Length: 190
Length: 191
Image 1 (cartoon, rainbow over the protein chains, first blue to last red):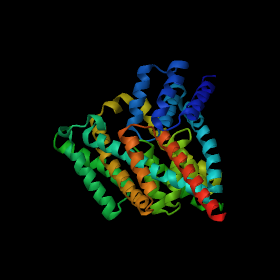
Image 2 (image 1 turned 60 degrees about the vertical axis):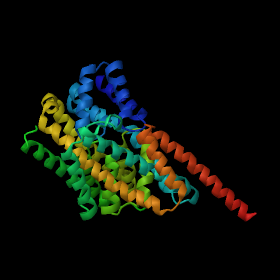
Image 3 (image 1 turned 60 degrees about the horizontal axis):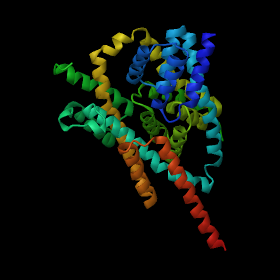
Image 4 (image 1 turned 135 degrees about the vertical axis):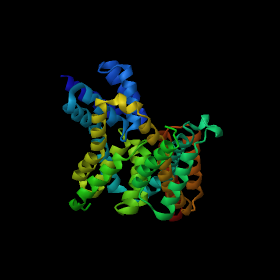
């Protein structure tokens, strides 16, 4: 019974979280903490911390986390599947129509206007992450004295390697983690 | 659409690796997907990747999952979608399942905290690299409307905290208006 409840709770999370990861957090809180009382608020905030520290979408991470703590592996599978069923159905329909009509010239004109916006959205996400990386702060709270030189160096070197040598992105991400941690560890700042 | 099942393993493997290494939200994985599927494997066109991003952002659910559904469908139909989803959700499922058993130690480990902090600089570099290429292509269209829209959309999302969803919908509206103007011109020329 609990498993079925979990399953439907996460279908709702998947269905109503429009607009990215952070939109899902209040929905998960509503379903799991307030409505079904499957977790305490404290456990839930731990979950957010862990979800931010690990790769993967926040709703999948929380589906797994909640599922594991409440019902083990079957819980993980059921919660995660529940969470992605709405995405799967809706995006499959959208994909079908997109590929059917995307060469129509009228559709091209409409899509053409959305592309510059997507570039801007990606740029904005990049700028936010850069500020967090360099200052550990959002734009509004940035102060030059908080500039972290190690991160600045990593950013410049990484961008150079990507532009000049077309280095693999995954290598860059993992490499910057290893290199930066080594610098901090060797200078005794951890 | 031609269905090609020979690409399924590459599709699964690449989604798995991208998902396992994506720290920091949906647009990070979009940048990585663009590098992988547009630049490296040449499975998708650049415009197509941007369209897919706009669609995934407007649909409910996690962005990486939505993008996998559409890219998988493009490569091998519904089987491709399922394959891509499996690749995308397996890494977080495994990682979180393991971590949920001892998350106190994980959360308080200073080395992990430092690695995650410095990794942001690397992630930002990857996104900037992708954005530079994309922005150059928008400039190359030489359409003032598109260039102004790009600048305004960036200002709105980054400086004014307007939601991504609202920006996409506004541009959809501008696109429809653009379409109406174009059709109007054509009609004018015909008569």
